Image (cartoon, rainbow, N blue to C red; front, side):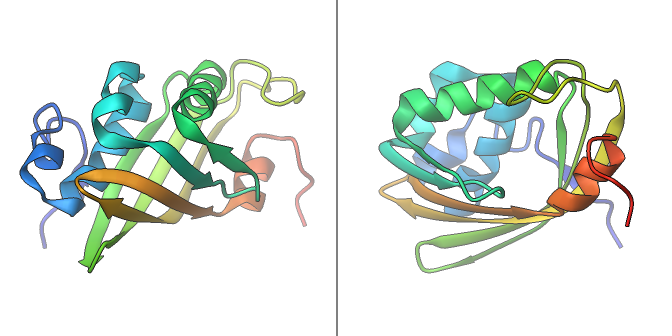
Length: 154
């Protein structure tokens, strides 16, 4: 069994997006988040991106998407994704991953705890003409909030 692949270096500065591999295009989004590579948003993500977050919010367009990533990177500067599976069918890509980070800055009104979290999630991407046009995110939000100390243990 081969070890899980991280995204770092896996798509070589997003060449997969240009080459038409929709799996690589989806994977590149995680690199953009981890590296805060905001200029890459223009190359990888459609201008009218629609991102359905794991908390039920909708993020629309490049500016909101960038702001969302910037907010995450501020709260969790060490955020890391480890890709465990990538499956593609038609124009959709499903990515199963583990995400880890340390809560060091206020996030949406919640004060930082300095705690670390590690949860698994599955995101579904729709890719058209080499760009991500829509993302549906789903992760273990309750477990993340409990690990960060901002939700009670049940």
